[in-house]
Image 1: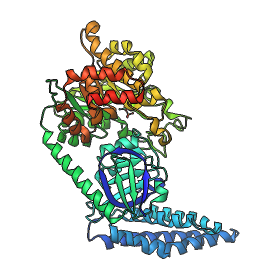
Image 2: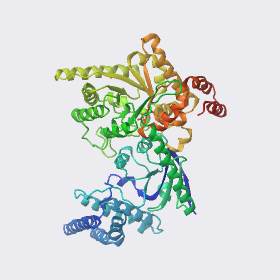
Image 3: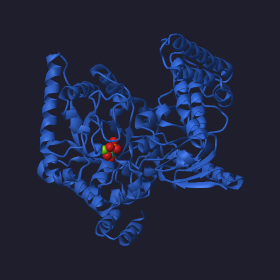
Length: 585
Ligand code: PEP
Ligand code: MG
């Protein structure tokens, strides 16, 4: 009987593949496929690592002091035995030969299989031996470090679905090379940063599936229905066929959308809509351009800073990255956000270079984004100098996340002024950059008159705006059903922000450019509503751009405006749903 599990759908489409279970502790080992024909060489790497560990254990045993407790030598004996145990030696080699996993990946896959069978044992003594296996595997992984295998292209056998309890956003980035065809995690919500990275990979994903990593086993067949948040484990052949057909259909409709790539994003009544890309790394510019993006609306620079331990990128490295994006986008506007570290995006799980600052009770309400930058002005100015230098190479806008206080606004501009002065003192003329504010906190919406006075543009971060308006942790699956971008309070704040940016024309002499760069902008079901609220600039993952364009081409903005106002007037879900239906959403 197939097992069905439900979670939060975060990235559309259907994946059908074999489960690969990853314990989060071992996510930092390299995962790649080896070249066909390299299997035996990779098994030799594993064999060499086993010999090295055996020698290491022997030395340990030889050097035990004479008065060491006898248990210590016995423990080392157990570890030596485990090293040759067929469950470790033979089965790991079998992952390499059957699936072409690199040795590290094969080891962690096999460790998960072993750990599970230990967990199911009744005998407490035997259950505890799991720790011994883990220690032996850790030693083997250490021995493998430094001896590189040969990465190859994805294997042509079964497609693979990654199943994990949780995947940190930075770990998710290493899967950009396309090893997996689907993602499943136990935790997370629709706009958790892990979900956002999964969406940027354009791979079907379900998060918040609670027990998934406990119930799914290595190599199980899994269907990931990313449209409906459904997982089917060990499906019957009939269901499998049904989903294979659906998968083909969804791929076909994506291919059809490709035809819109060079079509201007213009509504039926002739309004030109700006469609921008959200990116995480400079390399993502390629997919932005492929999707026909008019520029970059959000470059989340924090990903350049993650997994670096204490070795954070300096001014030159950052400058190279920002200039690279500006140049790759060939004269199109590029919006680069200063780092948004904190909350569910720590710098490094293991090394926090500012020791322990993320251990706050509620990091989403703690030191993150602009608060983090302003708490370390020297580090902030390194980023600002790099940005101002890159601005000399093309149209660059600097975006500041999560502002709420006038003090933060003034301190940000003061830091910008200092960064310009520092560059000039070094004989470098800073480029011209527009400065923008992210609107992510309800308090910022109510402070808009002040923000609009100082900033050149505004970008609405709806992911956080929903989180902070409704007091819902966006990464917490237990309240994921309350995370509602259509909540009337959220829509009021959105409408007010857009309207006030347009109205700046009357007192500032020009409207303030406003876009939405949260996940709402990339949801084609919300495109008509946002157009009706007056939004003319949308920033989203490149993978979503053509679906949104498809909606725009069929929309009449003038006709949508009164219909969107009618949605704003409704507070009860059923009445709101009727108003949305009239809008065609
Ligand atoms: C947002 O909050 O909507 C946003 C775009 O920023 P992030 O998702 O990186 O917090
Ligand atoms: Mg945000």
